[in-house]
Amino acid sequence: MSWASVSPTVLPLAGVAIGACGTLLGQHLAMRVEARREASRRASDQRAERKDAIVGFLSATERVEQHRGQLSVEASRDTGDLIELMHAVWLAKKIIELVCSGTLAQAAQDYTRELNRASQELGPHSTRRRSPALSAHEQQLRAEFMETARRELGYAGEPLLRRTHAEDNSPDVSATTALQN
Image (cartoon, rainbow, N blue to C red; front, top):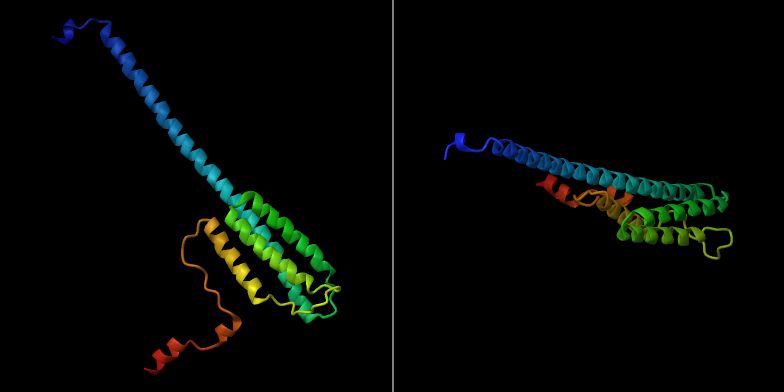
């Protein structure tokens, strides 16, 4: 069978069929690319929303920590401001619950509850007096929140090194031994 014997209407029909298949394939590929682009945009928007919630929570807790630090310097400072600052922390924690994972929301809850409990002990009606500085438990809960937040935002590396001020000032035993050899 030769090309000359093929009906003159078959070749144009074959061309139309091949063209239609090419168009459909092109549209399918374009739709897949657009769907990936949209999913990437949504993921980026969600990460930005989570990051904003985390930053808002950290900002609120930092203000409480700073205020408590000033309480230790200025014994006469009014603790009434602390109530308003804790209100902002609770609100920021609720935003975390709305836009972040349950794990991060729980870490924020634990840290907020401990900050609130310790801050109430500083109030004028408290029967128990304590140092306004963050307790070791509060520092631990803050560190746990930070590590959970880092994982939430996609950081998969090693955890932050948390040294206390006393550890910063003490010599490293292994370094001292290495220097003596």
